[in-house]
Amino acid sequence: MIELEGSPMLTREELRRAGTGIYDDWTALWNGGTELAGQIMAPLFTLRYAQANTEPFDEIRTPPQLADVIAAWRDKRGDLRFTAEGTPVVDLELLDGTLNGLVARPYLAVFTGDDGGEVARSGTDTLRVEGGLITEVWSVSSGAAGRTFYR
Image 1: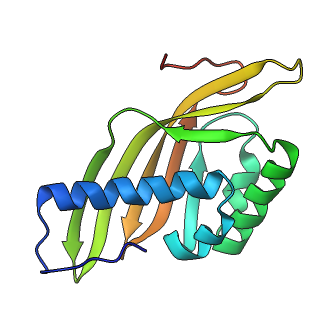
Image 2 (image 1 turned 90 degrees about the vertical axis):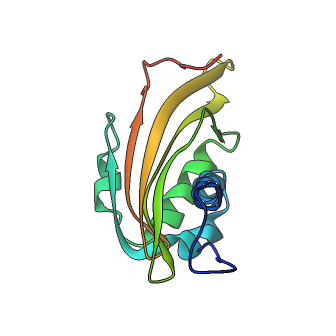
């Protein structure tokens, strides 16, 4: 969870930085920082992955479950690397001292394919934040036959 310092009123720029920080932590989680699951995810959350073969994500509801799935992915593709790209869209407000709202940003995922060549896929994740923790994620990617949108 992002620690907020200072007054109960945050400037637009402070809210933007906080939202970008939440997304950066989300990206770090997927890059193997599985200990972050318990810090940035709500005790119960919903994942909504809009690409083929992601049905197992529909059943993930807790930080330990998410950490386990990410660790298993990393065991299969140790070189998988996610990078935030583009400009984040941050629509957060401070309510009762915690961040609430939405953060969305494009990402690029890169890994070594079965043929030894580099595979790159892009997507966008939208994070719903309540009480300073991620409670819902919408993820859309270009999928296995997709392409990258950024060069």
